[in-house]
Image (cartoon, rainbow over all chains, first blue to last red; front, side, top):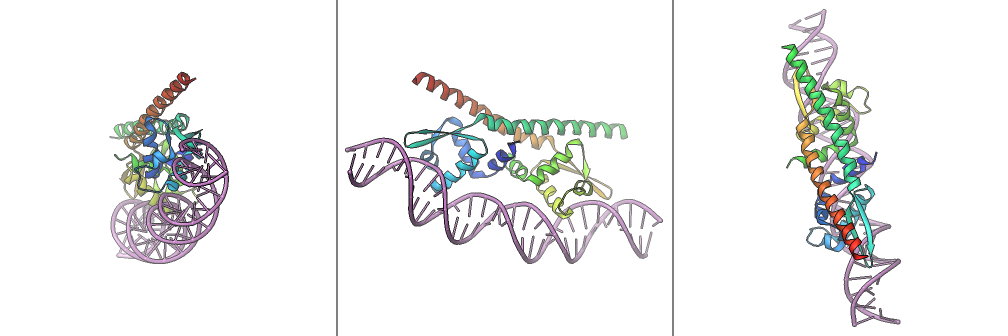
Length: 103
Length: 103
DNA sequence: ACTTACGGTAAGTCATTGCTTACGATTCGT
DNA sequence: ACGAATCGTAAGCAATGACTTACCGTAAGT
């Protein structure tokens, strides 16, 4: 269902940088933007896309907003790729079998 | 490494339709394009992108070219998401632990 | 040999999207 | 209460990308 938004969101290199930065744990927007070569509003826009895709969660903490990776969002994408991988392997084995029988 | 091209390629809905059509096994270009609402050259361009990303393999068969899903390409993407999922879960558990300790 | 089928490539067009600056709203510090 | 900090949103712009038509090469059929 929602894996489509997730894969679209992760297609952008900048957004992958952001989500890779969040691997260690939740971070505030300013902290994320610090050290990146784009403006802070641009980071905010990316965070919005990632959140809408279900890949991030937000927890307001006073003045700041802490973003963290949402395991469920990543898992949805994982499941899609697992099923794709299963089918690909099955088709590959079947094709190899056909070829062996053909020769 | 190459998972970046793969995730970029899979971000397009039309390309996901194509790769979903190939789950059953190899198909020729015309067969893939048949029933889709875009032109055949457009399908060819998508197939090129998917091949360059390592997600498809091509085996010429006489007049036609049979495209099939490359399990290795899918697996590279799977591995990236697995590592992301692991880190996300770890950070999530750590945050939950911190919160429990804080209260 | 000649025609038909198959499919990749080129050029051009239009929509999408990622970025910037400017602005507004909320919260913290003093 | 007032200034500073944090962050989201709006508007505008430039670049990327997906599609079309037109064209060309190669293999099959007759």
